[in-house]
Image (cartoon, rainbow, N blue to C red):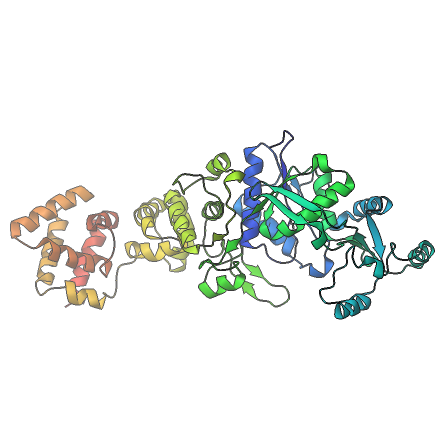
Length: 505
Ligand code: GLU
């Protein structure tokens, strides 16, 4: 790779919420930039005014804030290549369009939409290119004075790129290698429209990558077909020497693997395809987001990092710092990556295990308070530490931990039938007396004394412990009994035991 400073950009169009595939693209750019001590630029490509959606830009910014991926330069940050919103760069594009026209590499075309439509109806697979352009109304086919008259009169026009046919265009892609297409299959792309005074995506994209000194273009596979045209544009401007290197990332595929991941797959299988919840300003439709669904940003990042790349080892859990260290564009796959959302849940589970118990406890407090339950934070944290291994989402914690704070009032019928024996009431009252006599109510001391009592009496440990659990928890689940009773304390344990005997008789 070249010696120049690494500068990459994430350049979304604000046409709606950021798709999770876009987040993956941004992440790979971020990792690459950080790994090389380079810059990560945030550019908004909003030259297609018809597709502009209010709120989309703010949504994108908030998404990255949540994910903790910071830009160095761009919209909302600043930098020496601004403005970074393309709609604010009209004059710049106009100047560069003129450069191409003056060099004879682009031309004015005056064909009206209905003329173009008529042509398409008349000629099957019509393409505006070297073979057809002289039959159209443009500055190549019309006399110069007619062109001047049209321009003076303010006639609407577009500027088209004059593509020379019959040439193999090579795109040297870091992931895909040498991609070749023949220029004859390209049409004379529209670069600029007088109607709104704005360039099209292709021109704005190239001009900005050049002016923003972008060294690497890392983007989704869907942009690969544009790359040959972009090569030709760089060449037309004489910018080959500073042309960025390209890397087109693999597609994200449906969980089943057949075809491109879409929002419908998320709706169908119940997983979000957007980082944050999105409220469509037009339809009012609400689409779920990873944040609101309870995913930790670290888990989402780790999950996305492995969709199309792997470190070459079995390692799956990687912090952002590790990812920065290990990431390698050359190890990205060409083949599409299946969007295995169950794996994302697994990552979330893993990252919850790494969370600080007190932090998790604090996140659980609102749910506790909503049920009117209060407890000292250190006790809540202790319970969370014991129970977090059983959940994949923070929001599942309270349900899992509740029985520590709320005594059972009903007892699971199935468990009762199976675990509450005839002798259980008597044994549990005896157990209550045994526990009452214990001063040091620590886990080990309780266990030692209770086990000794079971042995002395010749009781069946399973029968005792199962009934004990039903009495304390209200059902058959939970961690080790003495882990539970240590947290509950003697008084509460006795209360629950004696109450259960009454209730279950
Ligand atoms: N505006 C394009 C997009 O929405 C950018 C493509 C590129 O990175 O060149 O993804």
